[in-house]
Structure formats: structure tokens, C-alpha cells
Length: 187
Image (cartoon, rainbow, N blue to C red; front, side, top):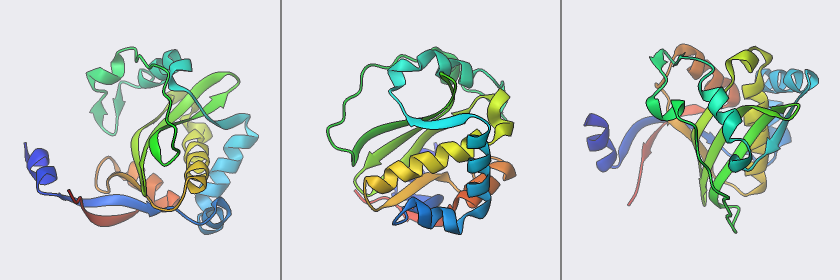
């Protein structure tokens, strides 16, 4: 229950935070490694898309089960069940769940669920299929998602605690421009 006590108190230690830039070109100019990896992924035949989750439930299930362990831990039971998504309609781009993906042909190989509430864009789930990670699909995924979030207005992207996961995950976040920031949630 330490996490519950921490969240109930409003403090969440250091989160990975990225200010939404004025344009995707601004972000690309400042993040050479991420830009090069996203571009290389595109040249390999992958493409970014904003998707409807209900159209890709089987692919999400395959992605989730493509590795038994992630970030040094076994996949939780919820990820190993076939997801069920209904049709989601959000009339306001600044308030809703934005579903993003990377496609190889017609197959979803990486996804990101971004929960947008005004100025806050919260990375809820982000995963890639094990067979496609070496092709840098996660960089293309994030760049595309960030480009859409730029269109929806200014704010910040929050991607969990900065110290969560492995050194590889922290490297990935930092290449994208995330920095550790102490966060206090206001009620």
C-alpha cells in the first residue's frame, strides 16, 4: 500500500515529464537520436497511424503475449487476456483516450494509449511486439503520437515514474526528451 499512500497524499516522486513542443519539427531538431531511429523505422516499411482500438484487439493480444517478461518482470495477467474494446467516441481532442499505433502492412506491431485531459497527456500503455522492437518501432510510435498531441494543444506528457523500469527504458525516455520532475497532483 505504499503507492496508494503516496498517491493519496498528492505526491508522486519524480515522474518522466516532457513539455509538449510548439511543433514536431522543433522536437525533431532537439532529439537527433529519436529522430534518426524513427526515420529508419519508416524506411523499413513501418507507418504510424491513429487507430481505433476495437479494430486491432487481436493484434494487441499478440503484442502483449510476444514476450513473457518486460522490464524484468513477468507480464501481468491483465495483459495476457484478449482485450475487448468498444467503439470509443470523444468529441473533444483535448479530453479522451487517443489510440496510436505502428503498422507493418495491415498488422499492428506497437501501440500507445494516451489519456488526454486538457494540458495533461498521460502515457497509459505503450508496448511493441518483440519481433519488431529491433526495427525501432517505439521511436516511430512516440514521434507520431507526439505530433498528434502537438496538434491538440500545449501541455505536458507524463510517462510514469522516472525511476520505473530498467536502464534501457530510462534511456528510451531520455532520448525522447523526458526528464525527471517532481509532481504533485492537485485535487
